[in-house]
Length: 497
Image (cartoon, rainbow, N blue to C red; front, side, top):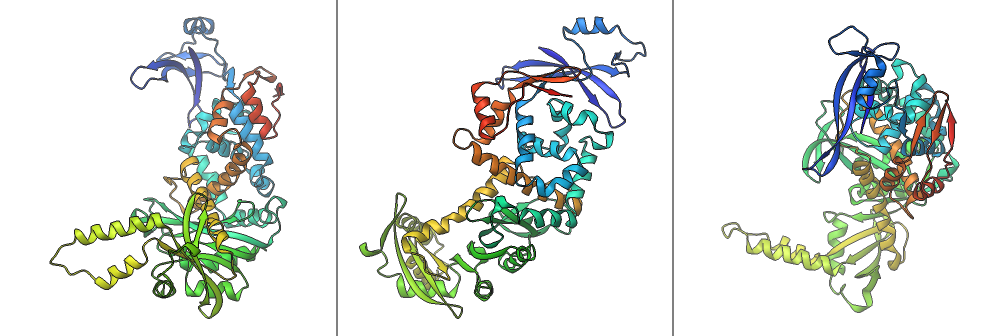
């Protein structure tokens, strides 16, 4: 099957290409083969290659076996319309309405990134094959097309501090996020490695070693699981030194935190004293390098693995003990948790290291003894007592942010970062935060029956036909109806142009 696709160059010239679907026997999938036909004049005629003569339009169409039109007669409808309309229902739309009105192409850019995460330079060709070309872009000026240059212009706008402040000042107070005061939040950070030449980019530690990177800090509402705020800092700034600023910025937007769930990277004497001083309760993991951790191992590790300390977390059997103590001068609680499965792995690793050690280099026996005594043990600390049976579930709520980072990097193609100016980098990261909020809201509505990816693949199969004055939508299948219903969006029979 063949059809005609037009492409518009930067000089505003329109070219015609014959697109033919062919089966690839090696990859065992269909692929499109493009053949250049010639330029298109103002009347819609295809000018023959190398000739100024206007070919007979009907003969050209007859030769191809297709009917030529300046725009596709059949366009993808379901996925683009679903996401574009859902954007208007999401929690970010009203706080960002001013940006959508200033840059109408922003909605199409976000729709593309949610439907088809990938390089942004593919956005314009993707839009041309969807109903957005007729609904939105047919009336837009050349400066509003989604070329790479114009996308950079949109990102530079989103990167402005004034734009982001205007958004967050409204978003953080929206009813969908609940009350601004007394929020219980999860704070975590992840690395965004890249090779961009920017003062904002710096060498820092990550899971893969030392890399040039940003650090992306995300604050998630513990109750609603909604991302409510983000910050980015250079990679050479440690997580432990960012907590006070993050909470201070939230407070500047009118958000008062009452509880913070923190990873070990934020656990320090200064941070815990800061939380105590500002009346913010917390639950955090204590790094093994802290003095309080070592003291607890020496005092309470012996006898931890006993029947009276046994507890269940899901299908896992653990051993735990609560110790009331003082944390940097303030009353607090430490929870010593022993995982027997992890203990076996840690001891096996230690023995293998000792067996494989070079006999000429004397090992630190005291260090090995400490490693053996703490095998399988991790510790949590809190400002208020939490029942030992509940502390594991409370702490593992932190995995919500790990999932959020996973969605950003895997589902929304956050990496690699290809922007180069500071303004477009800031705009790109802000755009990713917005996409993440919309993606998670869409996922919650669909998760009973579909993943977001499955839903968009099913919806994409719903097509529409373009007529001079209206768009006629084809009949949806049962699955497509279920997807639109879950998102509370009506599938129209037709739309006026």
